[in-house]
Length: 211
Image 1 (tube, rainbow, N blue to C red):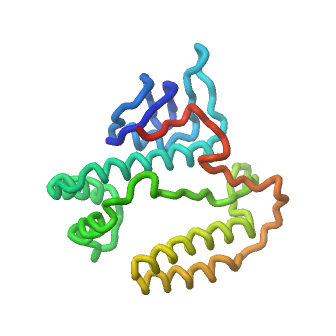
Image 2: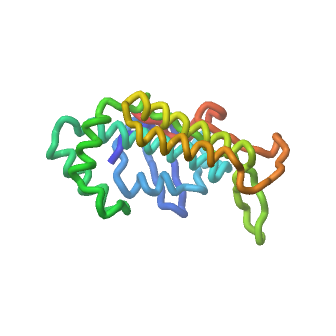
């Protein structure tokens, strides 16, 4: 589970989310999954259940809170190798990883980046615009804003790699950056139609934060 702080009770009948109490609490795996899947969230305030109404964009905020909480949880496992190994064993069973990516390599990477805390995690939302496709609402990458966001993201990784002496990583990042900054498709969207919702833009107090 992960520790999250809820200001309001939350529920989503589609994902199975049901947070009945407020405050800092340990969320188990089933509820954590329901939280990051939630697209039809209701929160209880002013004696009534209120609809979130922001669907995917608000879900991004909840997914970011989940990863921040997960990072804190992983960090708390150090330096207990047995606890870390147990955590990795449980996590890998629910993830698809390269066959050559062994648990020992994961532990080695974990120790290398064990000092990375929640404050060191930077998140970026891909700029998108909404479009109706075959009667369904969809979000598509907004160019050139999306390519610039990807380029900035990869450039940050390349800079970190150079600082750590990872020449191969920085080279790969630089190459990917030059590719990403060249849009493959053109989608002229007025600036007013581009959504770049980030954790700093809208308060959304019903969404949880780490604790």
